[in-house]
Amino acid sequence: MPPHDDLRTIGGDVHVSPRYLAAATATGDPALAPLLDLGWDLEHDDLGNAYVHAPDRTVRLGYLPEGEDDGLWRINAYRDAFGPPTWGVCFNDSCPTEFVRAFTTALAEAYEQGSDAYLAAPDSRSTDREPFLAAAPLINRGWQLERPSGGVLAIRSPDGLAGLECTTGRLDPQAELTTRDARWQLWAGTSIDHPAWYATASSNTPVALLRAVTECVSDPAPLLRWREETYSYIQGLARLTPVLPPHPPAPTPLDVQRAASRHSAALPASSVPRWSTTSRPALRGPRR
Image 1 (spheres, rainbow, N blue to C red):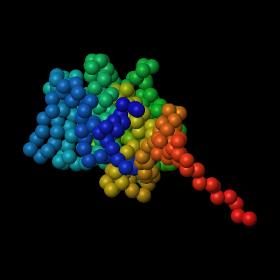
Image 2: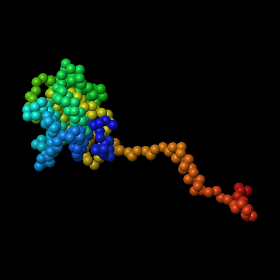
Image 3: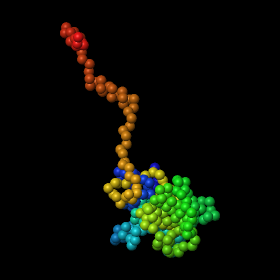
Image 4: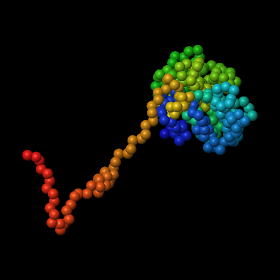
């Protein structure tokens, strides 16, 4: 099972496919877990928002169900804990929780490696930080690269219901952190202008973290959801398949032998006492 799909915490009675037509689950706990497992600090405000901080405060996550907009998850990293963010990522309130978990899992791994990993900006001159590596999982799984238009490089899913856009040229660093005008935008639905869900990432977001999300989004395996929780998938677009109980295991030769023994014991053969003078009743023959 891929590390971003923890079925112990996200269950359901239907499979949703393709997985990018799922939506957020009722709880964000699975996406917080990779960072909390490292011992990061967890705080809450009076409204019910949650904040997770790295011990050195150079990475901060906000889970904001009571935020000012639909940016449910906001994650920033800093070279200086008291300076401006080096990069920022946002997942809106409908984005599948598994995709956020994929990001936080990769972030936890990068943080353990040090600042050279979690602050590694994309670099077209580097073999492991080439920006296009973030889109490679999509291309490898059949997503189509569209003709560049208006300074935007777009990749679309085979059914046209999800996409990744990368904007070229200069961008306003502040706008990248606070609006959808970011370097990277991942979305699903019938239109990028009115997406069912979206995620954005600023220019300096490490390629390895972006790739973890595109790997998860393009995974062909479905996601689990509850049919009655209609907010957790995109109605009318997602394909729902009931989760069937597993088939019972096939009987082993020993099982067959035991069953036969029990059957024989339950149906004893008729007999006549050995020293009896009573004859066995004659069997009825065919009529003549």
